[in-house]
Amino acid sequence: MIQSTSMIKAAIFAAALACLGGSVPMNSPQSPDPGLLASFIPRTAGPWLSEADQVFDADSIFSYIDGAGEVYRSYNMKRLVARRFHKDGKPDLVVDAFDMGASADAFGVFTHDLDGEDAGIGQGSNYKAGLLSFWKDRYFLSVYAEEETPETKALVLDLGRAIAAAIPGQGRKPDLLDLLPPEGLDSRAVRYFHTYSVLNHHYFVANHDILQFDKADEAVLAPYGAKGDRSLLLIVAYDAEARAELAAGTFHEAYWPGRTGTAFRMKNGRWTALRVLAWYVAVVFEAGSAEEAQARLDAVQQLVVKPHGGAPRAVSGS
Image (cartoon, rainbow, N blue to C red; front, top):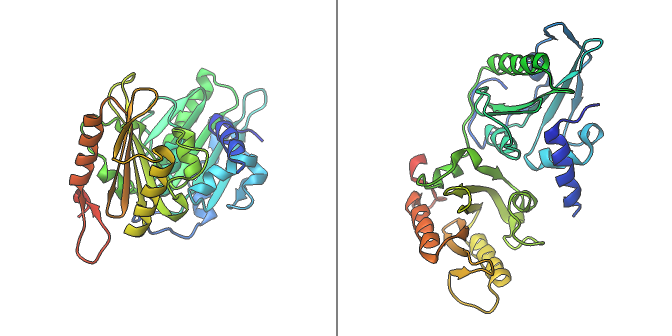
């Protein structure tokens, strides 16, 4: 069994945790169909021939990729079809096709590892050193060559294009992304996730869950500004205002014990600021000034509408 670069990185991350068809709405998971999933993958890749498929669910995935399965499970994976292509004397090719159940989670698991260059495949893709990853509709795909050569690179990209073309639907990105102010945003480096462990993987906050992620639904982490002077915006969505208030309280107690206010200068000279916006907690990390941090939170607040009797939503999602 071959583990792709993303799987190996995910396995390291998971060890540190030791602690179908058409477009679908973000929050409407669909029943997995391994036959349909397998039908998207070609049976040959040039002169490479496919071996028998392996099929895994959220429980059996550990037998295929060990600890890295926890990463995919954190995005609610439903099914994985793995297909290997072999040609004597040549590096094997491997396709791992994940049915994530909803397009938001297909997008989310894609954002977990954004290393590489955009290959222009699917609804978002990266290629680096023999590994192609992309998402389309509710599916996440990894196409990998055991060894990168000009020949295997071309085959990996051809496989990716063929699979993307076979998936008929287009998926929606999570609505939560609509709360990200566009000015200064590096949209290609946005991360979407559900767990505190994934947050700490991308930006370490604390060694315990000070943001009450066990009561949260989803979160997004987005970088702003140029490299070398970059700040981060975190937005966490809860299912009730009381839970957002509770999370803000536990964050404040851990980050700024015994102090009052909403923005503080950290030991590294950068600024952190927090605000509760109805069902959301928004936090700015690594801002260059208190004014920058508060201005970003003001911009988020302008994008939140709270309809009478219902949960808040982004202005652009109304």
